[in-house]
Length: 151
Image 1 (spheres, rainbow, N blue to C red):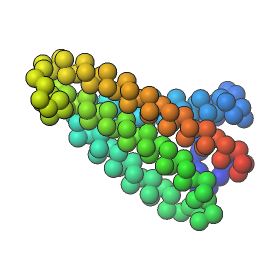
Image 2: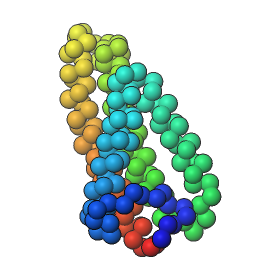
Image 3: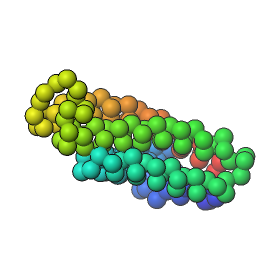
Image 4: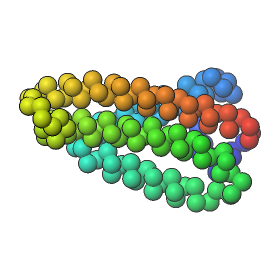
């Protein structure tokens, strides 16, 4: 059964298995949505991460426009958790992008080469991605539990 106000999810081999759905949603959100769309784009050009993040927020608003009021308690926790994860992923992208473009903007008072700045930013991004992973994992769990309650 397709719930009208929740996004459809591609079925997995273990369809119906909650752990498989959680892992599937988590990996998809982490790899595609956070890493590829936000962090790598920010590494290429630091302004792309915030632009894509703003577009995603606008798109969520458009998609959730038709959600009945009774559906918000199911959708809102997922959007808050995923949104925070995506904001942190965009932060990592901006940090990486600025580290090779203008290292002195990222690390004020430290004079380092671009290579050193990128290395330091990559190390910082590992810490950021720990939080991104946590937020997106909890969001995937909440999403699957919400879907299982509705369906």
